[in-house]
Picture 1 (spheres, rainbow, N blue to C red):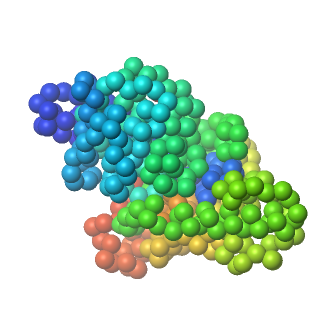
Picture 2 (tube, one colour):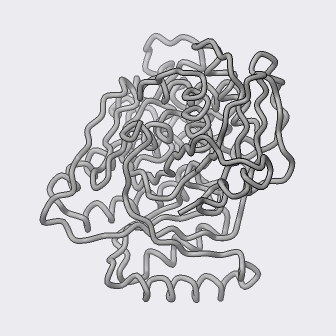
Picture 3 (cartoon, rainbow, N blue to C red):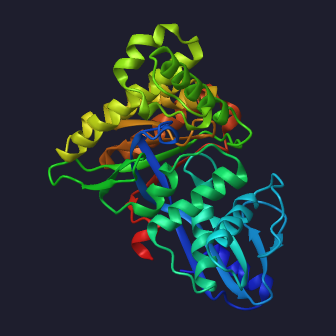
Amino acid sequence: MAMHCEKKFYEIYSRDAEGLAFSPYRICPIGAHSDHNLGKITGLAIDKGIHIAFSCKKNGVIEMTSLQFPKRAQWHIREIPPRTGDWADYLRGATWALAKEHALTMGMCGVIEGSLPIGGLSSSAAVILAFLDALAKINGIRLTMSELIAIAFDAEKNYVGVNVGTLDQSCEVLSRKDHLLYLDCRDNRYELIPTHPDMKAYQIAIFFSGLEHSLAGSKYNMRVDELRAGVYALQAFSGAEYGKFSEANARDVSFSVYQAYKDRLPKQWQLRCEHWYTEYQRVEAGAEAWRRGDLEAYGRLSFESGWSSIHNWESGAPEQIKLYEIMRETDGIYGGRFSGAGFKGCCMALIDPDRAETVAETVEKKYLDAFPEMKGRYSFHICRSADGLGVTL
């Protein structure tokens, strides 16, 4: 079946695209707000994502169109402009990061299509990864999975300016269908835990609140700084050696040190640390629950992760918080939380496939009763786990 981006490509260029790149979106049921301080995460790639229909441009020009955003973007592989604040920054950043590691000789024209609304499924990392895959192929570059993750991370952190960790890129590259990715962000070691044969059946439900926000322009970076400030102070209180502020990581300060000195921290810093340390424990418990096929226990931990994101990390707009609260009281939902950093408009849940219809109806009715202005903007989607980009390279 032809994608919309392939049809649009033909409309613009009067010829078929030479290739189609795809990167899946991801969910992270347990492990949020942890990767940037070298924590652990659990995640799954899903069968929805970013497609790019593309062809080579021998003059070195990159020309990209998005089905989601207006205005075509254009730049040259050797003259990458500074960040402009529009949707194409992620692609410029990817070009910049790839060019640092590999010689680029060919440009590209392409059309980008996202298969779900923007907001909370790490669409930014998926856009970067799909674009990198296409641009590398056109230039005859073979990227390993670890290179893909590192270059995509460099693009988003050091060009776009979002203080991300490697959670998003890792989930979208390393995941395997019907496996849970269990990743240690300190050394990038990971395990793919297969779905236990006795585990109850599940589907992944995505609830879009109708909100769309920019991550870089949100409080995301400030929350990361607050956590780091707390960690920096804990190192000082405990007499530990410490270096640059930007190099302070919660992973380097033990839970017992945090417990001993947490009452000396300003309230906001204490809350950010409380989230990080308890989320670390939830991830370890969640991986073991998945290993033994206990979906209920894994789901409960995901709900707890959501609670901590609201109360300790202090993320989430009122619409998202309401969606989360509705999910918690809806039969047929094993667990769930905000998807993404909690500054965008999406929640994810693991649900009983036999009750999907009832879940969809119940959540929509209760949510639109609370926020009637979101009618027409709210949406519900069913997804399944999928292979990451690295598996299909």
